[in-house]
Image 1 (cartoon, rainbow, N blue to C red):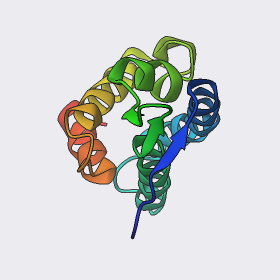
Image 2 (cartoon, one colour):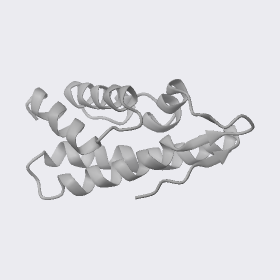
Image 3 (tube, rainbow, N blue to C red):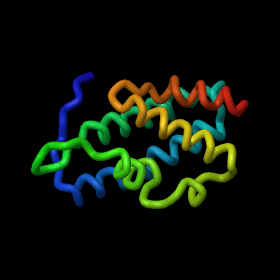
Length: 125
């Protein structure tokens, strides 16, 4: 798959991230609730990966810089809120936070399905 870089002004990038954030979070919740052995786990992770791949390629005009980790947290991973506002329990929040940090630590090569699978197994969910 070829990813094309998208250059956006800050407000446009923020809007795009916030819009994709809703879907990313919804699919995380589904993957978490259904578990790693569900027949839909791969689907949810694939969708999350596609949205992440879109967001990570956005550069900000005029200098074509990547979106900062802080802005990714605010705009994409938490949708302008905090995880406890949209996640059900402490374990779910911990799994989500671990996933976010694992993705950001490996921004270019993060494999969401592999990361989420391993994190959920570690937490016993």
